Length: 165
Image 1 (cartoon, rainbow, N blue to C red):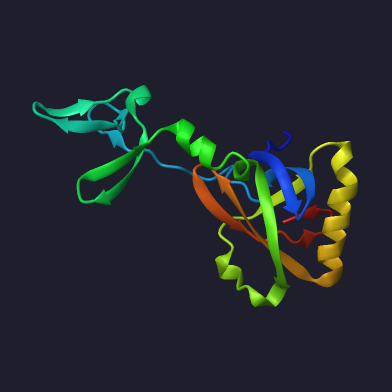
Image 2 (cartoon, rainbow, N blue to C red):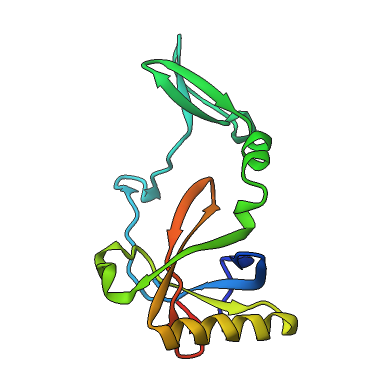
């Protein structure tokens, strides 16, 4: 089965944008995952989203849940999904390469989860190959960042055979 990209966007170096797709470099396929089961009935335990109401726990429908930031204990600033989208519209589809460092300057413990970046379409091939080969030849890592899934991620693309890693 062909791998499915988890993200697509652009790899940016200054004014150059290279369309790329991101694939996980590792797979959890075949891993054993346990579920919690209610022993008497044999039914799986479900996790409910809800609030504490006067009558006890009250389940809340998904469409009524938004994000918020607790600025002081019990006080939240509510943020609608559209507001988050406006803040990071450009960044969420771009990995900005901001700086280059020697490979040995970054301890491998800082790499949380590896992904492969591959060119997205024929028009991306040339720019992709130039960036990949330049990183390989210089033995450098590109330090960059992106906004993805409402988080800010740091990245260090580097060349690995025929793809970015």
